[in-house]
Length: 97
Image (cartoon, rainbow, N blue to C red; front, side, top):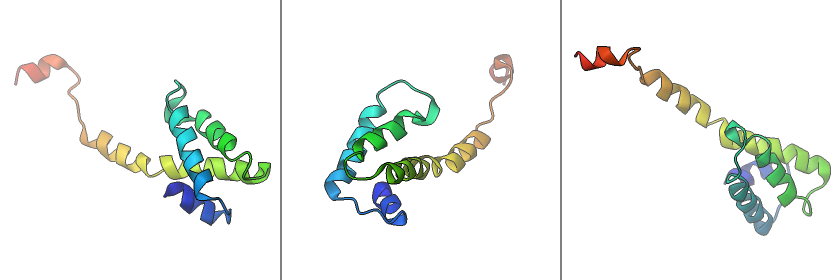
C-alpha cells in the first residue's frame, strides 16, 4: 500500500506488476548487511526495479519518498518504546531489590 500511495502522490502511473517488483526487490535488498534503516540499498533496489517503468528523475523522486514512507512512521514508536524502558545503571541495584 505504501508504494501505491507514494506513486499516486507523485502522479506516477505504475502497473501492479512494477509495484510487486519494487516490493520484492526491496525485501531481497534487506537481506544485505548495511547501514541502519537500509539506507542506500533500499533506494538502489527501488531504482533498479523502476528502471524500465520510470524515467531517471521520476525514479530518483520515488525512491527516497517511498523509503521515508516506510521509515518515518516507525520513529515515534521507537521513541515511545525507548522512553518507556528505563534500565537501572548498575545491575547490583536490581539484584538487591
